[in-house]
Image (cartoon, rainbow, N blue to C red):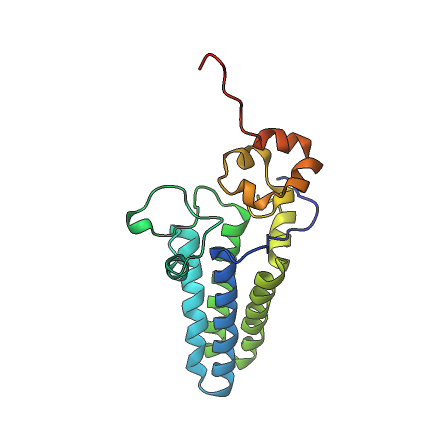
Length: 203
């Protein structure tokens, strides 16, 4: 297993679908946790639902919130390039890359945390609140502690321009968005991969 070095920070130059989903999910986690603690414990089921949806996104690629955002005009950066009926948004699920692992890891943890809150101790709200705050921070700044742990463990990132493999950059429709001209100049090898091939005079 390859251990990556450096920090994983996703692009924050615009509000694409995945970034907006993280912000909304974090807000739902924080509000559901607060309502469960202050109003009724069963509000924690909002956390459970968020966790189950996150797990579903990781395994099937289908995201209800992502599709609503697409209808509102948001564009994806990790959306499947395969044509879908009604132009639905699906997360890429061809490999277990870093961002996909975030969905399943967060989903499992907050689902288990919400169940433990109802079954054992209300102190588990501290965990769901922490995850919610971390997701809001992730969306706002691009930095995620869990993502950097997964990066160190060898997970392949797709949203961090400085760590994107050159082969994937060459075929990614969003490479021009993720990689700024200054970054291409700093990485001449990658710039050559991204530069369109000149047509042959015989073609």
